[in-house]
Length: 229
Image 1 (cartoon, helix red, strand yellow):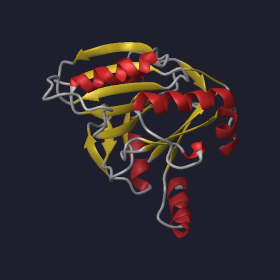
Image 2 (tube, one colour; image 1 turned 135 degrees about the vertical axis):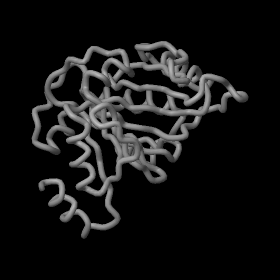
Image 3 (tube, one colour; image 1 turned 45 degrees about the horizontal axis):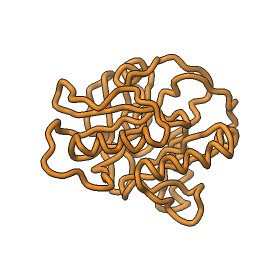
Image 4 (cartoon, helix red, strand yellow; image 1 turned 60 degrees about the horizontal axis):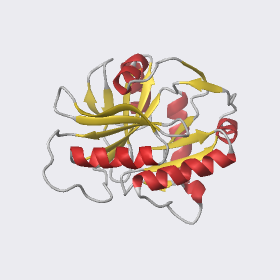
């Protein structure tokens, strides 16, 4: 599962590409920038102009406010969260939540990139175990989607072949991942906004697509049939 994020114009798409490359010290996946950024082997993020992204699904490209979607970069220790936040703010990001220890032992920070993407940086522990790696490399990346009812959405994703990993009914559900792809998590939209410190309100096109890559062309039609059903 890989996210494709939309920026308002071709110029902004190029600027977003440059920001993410600098913030995460990661190159594009190949010679074509449209192919996206390789997030150190834990997933891939592609950037496209919003109009082109909306045209793919015949949607109105108008969008405002919270897009109901949060990207996450998960590292091993707090010093790496701080280093990533420093790199992002140096590139023009706005801090939404400063780097801080959380009640259940996590250490997190949230920022909004210049292109509008909301990123959550996280470490599973609040204590450093050694020097921060440079550049900080993720143990995994994740895409969190705000939905009306996670349990109902889970049924859809299972129908297209995904398996739930952690299932807390309508509070939180995520899915088992394989190497090289982003984890997908589902939360109620209001809860996702609260967790990341943004206003939950937003209208129009979410300006993001999730891509599901199959092993062969022959697998695409059955996948579409399952999704439609």
